[in-house]
Image 1 (cartoon, rainbow, N blue to C red):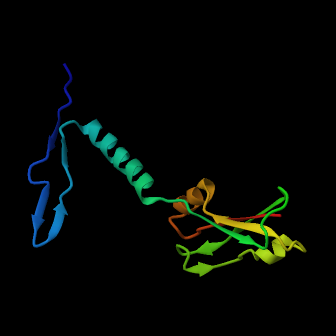
Image 2: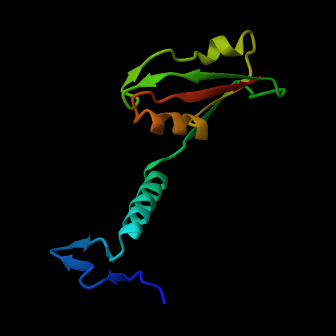
Image 3: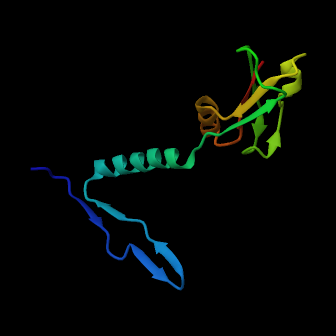
Length: 130
């Protein structure tokens, strides 16, 4: 028999008062010391997935991309994106092309760097397709 006892208490977790819906978090009571570490690691993992996001913003210039020639450059932002560093200029990256597609995104690698630096450095990637 397992000596680990996990009890979930759900009583009074949802309350509707004065037109607002209050949801209290579930309390997880763990009665084994090694399980506390697993609980904290699980909470950290779930939080990192729920609090992170990737975005993509696409702009078509002229008639859009004619070929599959791509130019990629990182944009550098600091302090959670409040201060900018070196930012790529899509017109310069496109060169003499008048028809191209600009895609600015936060890739997985950009998000990972952002998380590892606690938002002090928050890069994005700009891709020009000509």
